[in-house]
Length: 278
Image (tube, rainbow, N blue to C red):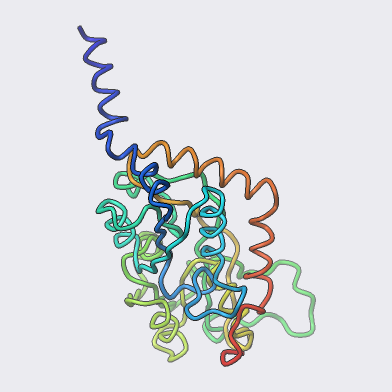
C-alpha cells in the first residue's frame, strides 16, 4: 500500500495535468508558435531592427520555429514574472531570455541552457583607484563585481525585480542600491551621476559597448564571471513533450556552432546597430 501510494504521488507530481503535456502538440497543429523575449534588451531583441539583424534570441526562436515547421510570433515582455504569467495563462508557448533558478523552477520548466552569462557592471572610473600610467598592468584589480566589495562609497543602479537586484541586496547590503523599472533608466542613472556603478548581465553590457564604444572612456566594464547565469527556454510546467524537444534543439545549435556564430554576430560586432545610434 505504501509503494502504491508513493507511485501515485510520483505520477501526480510529474503528470498533474495531461492537458499541459499536449499543449506543444496543439501548437504544432495550429502551425504557429508564440515565443516571448526580453523587451528593450538589445541585442537580444531589437525593435525595428536592421534587415538580417532581428536580435540574438529572436534568431534562436526563428530557428526553432523552422525546426518544428511552424510560423513564429514574437512577443516582447519585461520581467520574468511577465513571461511566467504569459506561459501559464497560455498566451505564449515558450519564453527566451530568462535565467533559471530553483525558485523560478517552481512556476515554469527550463530547458538546457543555450548560453551562459554572469552579472556584470559598468563602473565610473573616478570611483575606483586609477591604474598606474606608463606601466604594464599584469594583474588587473577590477575585473568583476566582487572586486568592488571594499571600494568606499560605491553605489549601484540595477533594474528592479531581477536576479541581479537580489544578488546586490545579498552581497552589497551596506551600499546604496537604487532600482529602476527599465534597463535604459538604470543606465541613465549612471550617466547622470546618480550612482557610480550600473549592474546588468555581462552580455547585455557587451552589447551596450558595441552600440556605444565611447562608454569605455569614462566607465570600466567588469565582465568576468561572478555567479553563472544559465539562459534557457522556459515552458509550461510539466509540458514534457515540448521540453524534450527544446533540449534536443538546444544541444544541436550548440554542437553545430550556431550559438557561437550568433554570439559573434551580436556581441563581437556592431553591424546590428542602427545607423542613428552609431
